[in-house]
Length: 91
Image (tube, rainbow, N blue to C red; front, side, top):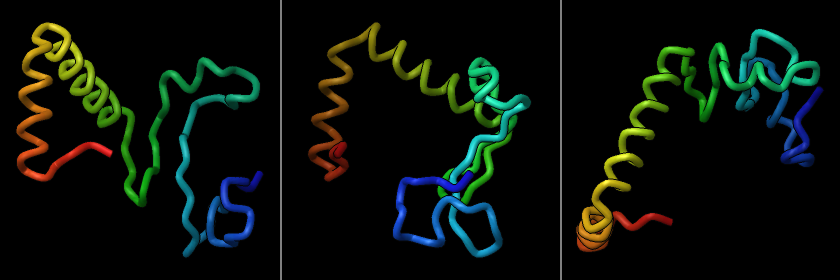
């Protein structure tokens, strides 16, 4: 089933050599069992493949950053100010 995100772009959403497509590889058909998306076998995003182990590591890192920020709200402000001074503002 082709993606509909960019209907006028023939190179987007079709899994074929030379085309661009971000996708989630799951063990089961998500149309039959949405829970399969909680444990993807891998993800292709922006031309890079992330296997299940890499995804777990990324998620653990994000969770740790949120936990640290929740424990120390003033560090979020300090980091935002530092990012602003360095031109690294979030968009």
